[in-house]
Structures are given as structure tokens and as C-alpha cells.
Length: 72
Image (cartoon, rainbow, N blue to C red; front, side, top):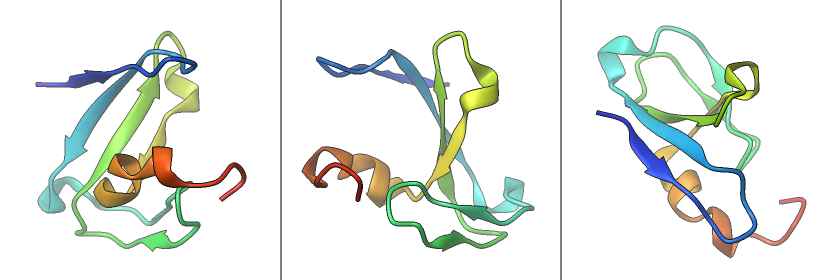
């Protein structure tokens, strides 16, 4: 079941966990700019109403995103 996240100055998003067996492609995490290799569990973050803007994040990067400085 998707989890919904919303911050004070953020667009509402849907956060969905991707299990390792579901992860078949490589992605670059926008939080750390590192690769998410196939068969690695991670999260997909989809802004409300904008499926094309979805991004794949390492779970820990998503959970720690508010601790990062802008541009990092």
C-alpha cells in the first residue's frame, strides 16, 4: 500500500517501496547521485498529479532528504 508524504513547503507525493525482485533497471538516486543497481530495494516517489516526474531513491536517502543542504 502506498504511503503518502508531505512536507511544509513540498508538493504532496506518493512513496512506494520497490522490492528487490521487482527492481529490474538501473537508476540514479537524486539524493546522493549514486547508482541504484538492479535487484536493490528502493522507493519510488511520485509527485501528486505528475507521474512523469517520478524518481527512484535509495530508501535511506529519501528518509534523510531533509538533512541535506540544497543542491546535495
